Structure formats: structure tokens, C-alpha cells
Image 1 (cartoon, one colour):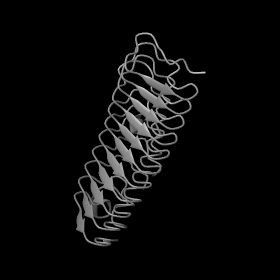
Image 2 (cartoon, one colour):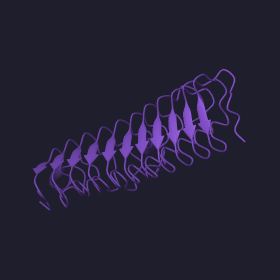
Image 3 (cartoon, helix red, strand yellow):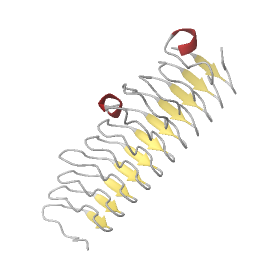
Amino acid sequence: QRQMCIRDSHYTVAIGKESLKSLTSGAGNTAIGYQSLDAATTDDYNTAVGYQSLSGITGTNNNHNSALGYGSGAGLTTGLQSVAIGSKSLQTHTTGSRNIAIGHQAMFDTDAGSTSLGSTDNIFIGKDAGGGTWADAASNYNVAIGNGSMEAALNGASYNVAVGHTAGDDLISAHRCTLVGAGAGSGALTGSGGPSGGDGLVAVGYASAGAI
């Protein structure tokens, strides 16, 4: 049974078994669903809707995260200002901040190690966007929009833009690529730098720069 009045926790809403069960003084939190935000203690302004959404948030100053969907953002512990919308979106990420993952299993499997788990400032929108099994390296500042975009095993990829269904779907370690169109860059970005890695590759159009 939920206790709806929590001392020193202002403007807080908890609906569902064990939602916000650990909160002591955090303010402005909303938790709806079984074990949503259940580990948060003094954290502020988080919104979690769905089974075990944001269930890992703990400690202090882990604020302004929003999660909607089964297990969304469940792994976040000390991350800030992240958004996870969709079942299992951002589910395993822990410490990286300001990531946006929208879509079923978007940015889903980032838990190779502490370095990959600290990746920040990524935007992945679409089913499985950024959802591959990442290596333990920081992949930061990427934008991928489209189902299956940038869904490979990212390994230190940064500053890339991929827009379109499966755009950049085998990009692993490349940097500063711009890929626009369904399948853009597919087959051209399997390595790191050079002709196969494709650092700085620009490809616009359906299946453009495939296997160059």
C-alpha cells in the first residue's frame, strides 16, 4: 500500500505499488507504475510512467529525467536530464546524462562497461535506434532518427548524424558523418576512420555511399 504523503517531499505524486517508496525529501517527482522511481531518495523533478521506469535513480541531485514505458530508463543511477520514451528505451544506461531515446529499445544495450555507460548527449529516435550492443567506449553527441538507424555495436562513435530508416546501421567507430536517406552509408562504415571507417562521410539519398 502506497503512502501518498511523504515528509519534506513537495509536489510529489506516487501511484502504484512501491513507486517512490524510498523518497525522503525530493520534490516535484511523479511516479506511476510498479516500482517506478522506487530507489529515489532526495532527487527532484523526475517523471516516471511505466513498470520499473527510472527504478535505478538513487542518491542525490539526479534530477529532471523523464521516462515513459515499460522499463524505460530503468538503469539510470546518476544521469541527469535524460528522456526515455518507449518500452525498454535507455534501459541499461546508468551515468550518462542528457540522452534522448525514443522508440522501442532505443539506446538499449549500452552496458559493456563504465565508459560506455557514461556516454552523453545522444539523440536516438526510432525502434532500435542506437540499440545495438555497444562496446565499452564513449559514444557521444550522435543524432540518429529512423527505425534501425545507427543500430550497430557502437564503439567510440561521436558527432554523427543519421536520418532515415536504417541510416548508418553499420556505423561502429566513425566520427562526424552525415547520412540522410533510407540505408544511407550502409556497408560503408564498418571500421574506424579511413576508407572503411568513413570519418567525415557525407551521404544523401537512398542507400547512398553503400559499400564504397
